Image (tube, rainbow, N blue to C red; front, side, top):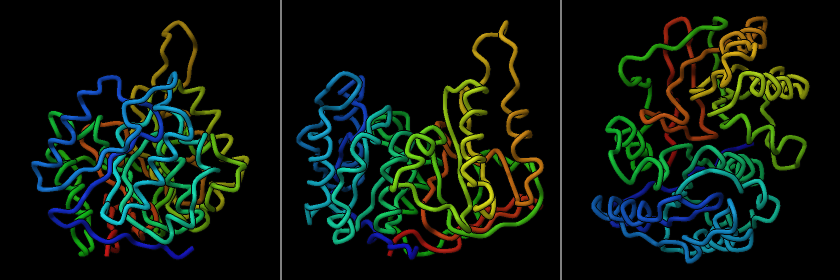
Length: 313
């Protein structure tokens, strides 16, 4: 699929804020996040249903969907940043008006549970979206300088980023050697498997497959990776890029378990495509923002990752 890039963000532009999954536990984070964006010189439009709750969801499916559609309809809004993940996006992806999004392509930011929306948007429209900082998680207080600078540079510049400089001189881990080049797609492993089998999951053919997750026991990661294996995803991809798997150790030391590294090795060590780990993306403070749908190059032998094109135009 040919990717569509959103327009870059300019000082003074309006940023929409929505919560298509779960609501922030502390709604004061919304105000603090909005104040942060305004200090940077942006106007902010908060979705009319932000702050609502329906159990573990940020309002009903209709309310969350209405905010999503309203932001894409609003010609003044140039970017949309999600407040947080949690759970809820798979419930609405079959109800999204993708024709509306394709007619009004704009920057859309989130990660974790937002993965389902991002992959569905790419499948139906080809729009590049951003797995990056969320307002009530990463941008409301004590913002990591590396993540902040990386994020805003991607959204405001049409220059390709080129070779990435990893935070704290982090090194990629080599599970299998080699080089790979392709469109980066993927995201949260749990959400990829949650929508697998639907018509809203894009093909990973010739892609660099990115995976990350949080708070999953190794046996659960094993189960989800096996689902990808059985579905032929690893045969389609040109390579695999493993991000952070935060708090994914065995929770009960008396319960026999494989380590996460052992699970990864069992699935990836025999693949005939490059597989690298320790990519600085996921549920971590120092994160690299990932534009789904752009071409990247990975060289595990030389510890290089390069963004081969800009993410905005």
